[in-house]
Image (cartoon, rainbow, N blue to C red; front, side, top):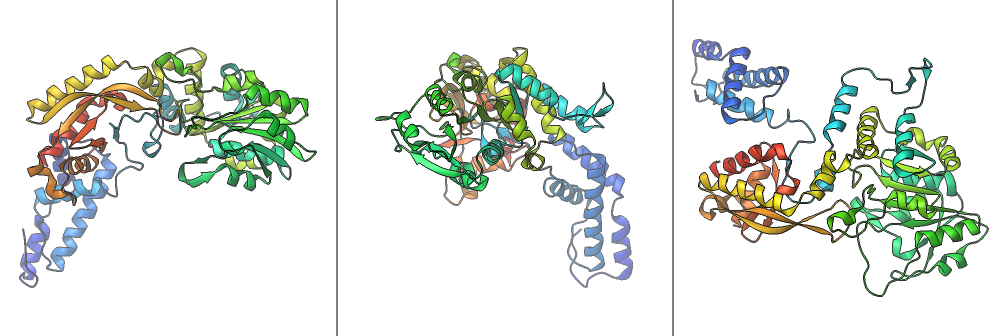
Length: 483
């Protein structure tokens, strides 16, 4: 009911307050509303909390004789809106229809079923995180995952910290503080967010020595720069860019030979962490940690949430004496991973050890998916949307690896290309671009859908949409047109 200020008597105010539904009645109506829309149901505690807040706001408005619609339908709408705002989980789960497999802004690698189950099992109670069950005394949280990394990477030992930048920081701090680190000018990379290798080097206390040029560096350049103050040679894999044309760079094996001849170390910052050979799917070769160890690198550092397909982590693998030295470094306490990350990483590495990574880890499943399978899904989406009167077509396109991995490499795919109706959609976008307006509505839906816009169409790429999300995605598109 809508009221004007000063228009209610005390009796009318009391009657309006009595007309407000109870918390239970409001929650029951809310559940019916959400079920009818096919929306996910919040927990009972969340429903009750939101209902109490909206009822309190309504009471305050009535007592202040302010205009308020306190009908059950209006309150249900307000509670539903509140649950989609402050009560939403964060980060919000979304559907990635962009075709970018490792999408940094969208959380990078989705976890496998085994990794998610491992997190749930550890999170629901206590765990033997740093407790040796056999000995009945304190143990190390990394014992099991280090054994897995030794098996998978072929290294003598390994450590894990919270991301690859941390892996580089603790490695350089522990092995090169106050001494020189030699690196090619062509490998002074900047990663996402403006973080640069030279900055990490300076923070570690090491001194940066640049050799060669942007496009051409030789082993002789490294050799000429080595002095008694040199701690190590650093090779950085350019995982987020590629230099083509008149180029030259030494192989890792050549650098390892030089380093060991001069009795210094070779560290390889690999970044992407591919543990499977990418050539199998028509992609260029992506260097693997196994390759780095075999080539003679003393330590190799790489990420857990890129091509490895696990949680965010920084992995250091290599010589056991160096790992032991880093293990006792004070930074290890500050950079260590928590129990949930550890559980997910352990489950992810298990898939590599038993040879099921291609089937179980979503990143590799997406990479391995053939174009024919993408075409079948795209055509199914098109047929479903056409039945709702939406203009859509299946079109050939390209997916990308993304996430600072394999720059320029693409995979053939098929898109479900949706053409919006400008008369319905252009008015809610300042540019008058109907496709951008539709994309914005998809991002504002529940769940949000992030897609690509190309010319006057919204492109939905099946490669990055998880198989169990198809029905939800199509409903989100229909809702975007109906809203």
